[in-house]
Length: 116
Image (tube, rainbow, N blue to C red; front, side):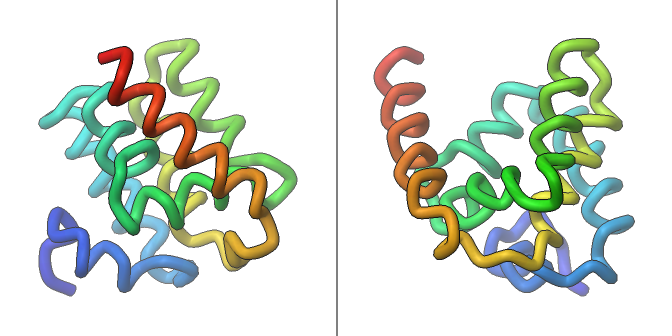
């Protein structure tokens, strides 16, 4: 697969578990390169199609994705944060089942862009 830094290529990994390990490595590198805040803004909270699709997926799988993201942030563990992001990307559930989370994603993005 071509570089995952391109959002179009990254979108091709959504809901495909075979990319889980590649995504962990990718997000670990992005966290090192961009820092935690910018990585989360770009791939989880940003105003782009990928982030709007991934944010609601945090709530799938008995909330493991969101737990990893939270623990990674709380204890300053980039690898755990990368695991949470990768889990959200490969989640099989469609955000259509989480309309509230989709709306929240948009609200969080709007709030962050105003307060930053």
